[in-house]
Length: 321
Image: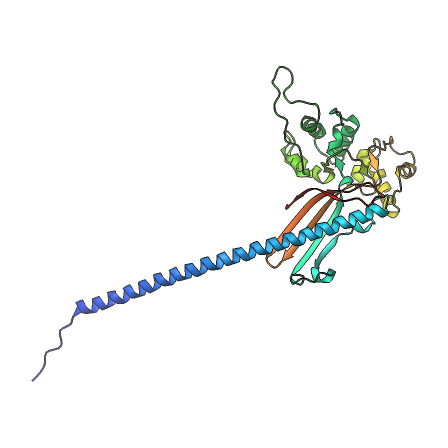
C-alpha cells in the first residue's frame, strides 16, 4: 500500500536556524569582548614599557650632560681660549653606548648623539640693555647690521631692542598719560623672538640661529662666531672681509683681542674689548638617545668659570625640545 509523504515541519527547522544564529552571534560578541580585553591589556603593557624606556633614556641623557660638563670644566682649566678646533667642539655622531665604554644592560640597545655649541658664538640680546637699565646703542647698531646682512626688515632690530628694554631695562610700557602695563615676559630661547609684537615669524626664524639670551652681558667669541656676526660686530667691516678673517682664524685661532686687531689690518672701525672676546663661558649642550622605540632629545645651557680655572659648570636651564 502506498504511504503518503511525510509532512514538512517548517516551524521546527526555523527554530533550529534561529538558535544557531543566536549561538553564532553570542560567540562573536564574546570574541569581540575578549579581544578588546586583550587589546586593552596589550596597550597598557606597551604604555608602561614606553614610559620605562623614556625614563631610562632620560637617565642616559643626564649622564651624557654630566659628561659634557666635565669636558667643558677640564677645557677651561687648561685653555685660555675657545676655538672650533678643540675637543668640546667636535660633535658625537650616532654611536652605540657599548662602543664608548658603557657596560650596562642597555648599552647594546641604546645609541647616543650630541654636540656642544658655543653660546657666545651668537649675539647675546641681553647686551642690548646695560646694567643700569639703559639701552646700549653700540649693541643695537650691531644687531641692526646683522639684520641688514640677513636681509631682514629694517625695523626688526628696533622691535627687538624695544622689547628687551621693556622686559629687562628701564623702559616701562605705557608712557605718557597711559598707566604702565606689566612688563612683557622675558625671552629665554632664541625661538621666543617669534612672540615679539610686530616681528614677522619669518624674520624671527631667520635671526634665531644668530642670537642667544644669556643671564648677563657677554661678548661675542670671534674664535667661534660666524662671518655674519663678525661683520655685524665691527662697523664698516664688509661680509667679504669678515669671511676672509674667519678663514684666517680657522687656520690659526685668535689668542687674544690684540691678535684680532692685528689680523684686521685696519679694516673696519674697530671694536671694544667689552664686546669681543676669544673665550667663552656659556655653552649649549644637545643630546639624543635612541633606545628601541624611544627617541629622546635634550638641550641645555650651561655656564662655566673663567678661563684658566677648574670651576664647576652650572646648569642654567634644561629642556626637551
